[in-house]
Length: 306
Image 1 (cartoon, rainbow, N blue to C red):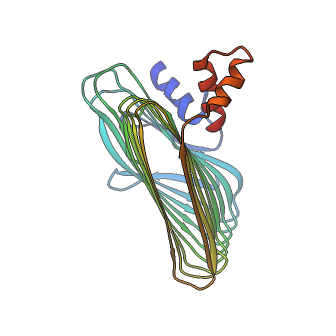
Image 2 (cartoon, rainbow, N blue to C red; image 1 turned 180 degrees about the vertical axis):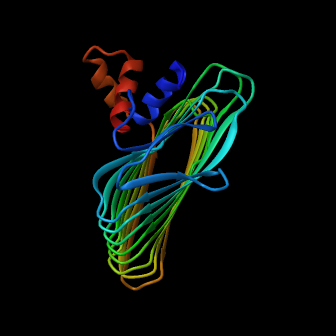
Image 3 (spheres, helix red, strand yellow; image 1 turned 120 degrees about the vertical axis):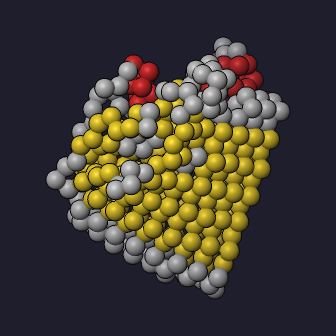
């Protein structure tokens, strides 16, 4: 059973108001709160208790897996390893994410390591949302690690979102793509106060026709700090694109490091990076419509991060 705080966190990170359909594993304060498998998707605990294995049968279509985590105890720290084995020709949605409520004086931390092994022509949409709240002095810390291994013709779309309340995060993602595999990443991030957010991607394109598109949009406010480090390695005739587009405000700092490495004559790789403040004419235009300056800023930021 989950209390009201945990249920609210669940809504924030997974848009869940009731028990989801399909396969799910709900984790609360370091323990499994609920679990369900289906005929095509089996969820089982690792033998050493460090996480779960998710087995998705070949050819599974139009099914979902929810594996959100919520923490509401101050001082709780955990590292969890979740492995996904997605069979050939599958097409599934996986929803993860973590929410932390900390009203105490001790730091609360969740480090989730997710490894995805996609079979030939498998397709996955992966949604990961992070959220923090609470008025305690203890920090809310999230350090997600993601590994993606795409077999021939496989594809994965990743939506990585962190908009509010996380004091410190170190997000590390790496991917290896075989021939014809595709990776699409859309990261949305906002920091405020004294928060720090480190985000790194290393994508290796090993097969002919492999492609990757890694795009981050972020807003840094107050005294926060962000670092975006994205590296695409082309080892075959392939295509890759990485982009960082950021808005900086107040006394925040942002460091963007896009990197490309071409090890094949036909590796076509592109990178882009842009950091700037909100244009004054945008704010003035919205203020002529009746908004205050603060309301105009919020409208621009919300539209930018959509």
